[in-house]
Image (cartoon, rainbow, N blue to C red; front, side):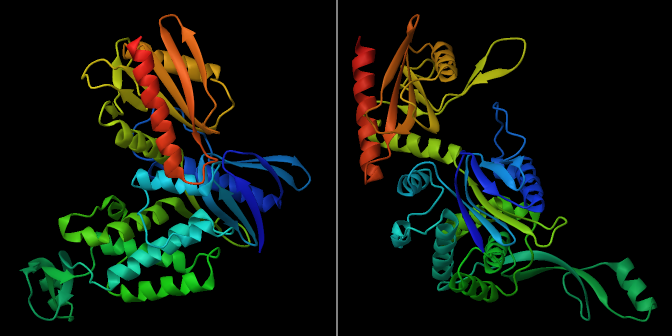
Length: 409
């Protein structure tokens, strides 16, 4: 199998067959139209028409770009591995802070040079599921309708009479069955089945997936509403395995459109969890002096419009001391004009004299612009630090000093 490495949101030239290019475009459009993959929250920003852009250059040369997502895409004998735009160690730290990934006891794979995000998620899922199965599966009562030889529960008289008159005596009954066929277990079974057939995974991981799927005997097929299932106090031991299973199912897709072999994918959208991770880190470090939260504000006008900064600093319920926005991009060393306009609007809408832009870079990249009564500053998360926790602490320190100095003026 031929493997090509890509970086998210970066165009790269590849050699493809026309059928592979067509299936890539189909896959990109399918994901872009999937609200489960993008998230169900309403968004004011315009979503792209395709997650995967594939532009023909000449001959068998194509320019391919995967927008704001990491993972893997398979096209028969071709595999595209999409790596994050920031170091994997920093991304995983932020995803854990955003509660998108569990804090596992087996993080050594992160240091392996050939570890991809999908293989890490698959490995963590298998570890969590094996740990879960050493305890026990949750059992629930479920409503079942079936034709039985003996009466059980509530009888359907019309269906039962028809069955007797047709010479096939049975009793149509509604009854409650106590078993393992429930939403949580169906999610685990579906994720295990996906991994067991995933060509990008090693034989060892696929074998472990098949063993888990076999242990989940008696669990039915995944239902559309199962994706919305959640753990509760009774099922806390499912938390890690269920969370990772949802990541696998939401990020995974298979297309069997015309072609010699199917196209498969596992893509994980990155901007929103990265934003949430940074906000969590800042909240933890500044909670003793500053309130930090995400809060929208409706604007007056002919149409409904809202301002939605990623960061609102201050303890007041109405106005804010400062606002901020997180951009999951590598810093260019300055504040771009469109970001300046956006942050100035945020500051005006919240009656905040200061606004801050947070990007990713060396940590010492700063910039500031004054627009009338408003000042916009920028800071970056230092992706060159070995320990991402140190990068978070450094960013929080910069913000605390900025808030204390600028707002005291």
